[in-house]
Image (cartoon, rainbow, N blue to C red; front, side):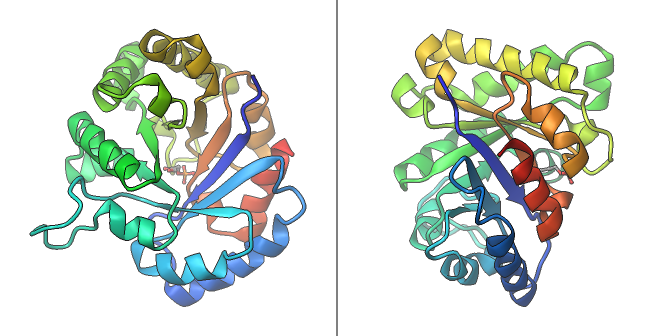
Length: 253
Ligand code: 13P
């Protein structure tokens, strides 16, 4: 089973509309030649989704959002429903990012509900899991990831699951410049795939793409992406500069 490599840029709370459009123009130029072998997505802030969606027309770069609410609409001041994102041309929604878990009280049960909303609206989830430094040092990494995955994925069958993207993002590696070694990352990715095998069977588990995230840069991407169960990257800081992001995309191509 060959899984198409999937590199996604999570812009977090960065870039005005004007800055976003400049970055998109630069990205379209920088990655035009490798786009068939690698799937590329970018997740700008909500405020830039609509103009970026227009700027991505006729490109092979997909649009992703960074969060959504589990309800379609209603009295949820300040929130955004999945159908609203779909209307803007969004294909993927990042769910359960560690910043949302740590800073905004996101739970596995919440991610589970949001995943259902994303699917119902016709989009696909990128579900983030990962351990803190304390948990790694206490040798709890695999157990933590297992609990998160089971909580996020419960109730979904193999047909839906095959299209999910999982992102393993060790919290201690996010924005710190400390990357997991390719061996450390591969160990967790292989564990995730074996958990998916238990949930949905081997055929489906082999189709699910598992991204690594946490200080991915041009100089460590090739090594990480060469691992058998690392099928892409979820890139934060290095996705904010076209040349840096393009170099990561090209690391696999
Ligand atoms: P950095 O690449 O800045 O470490 O961020 C990773 C991340 O959180 C992507 O979602």
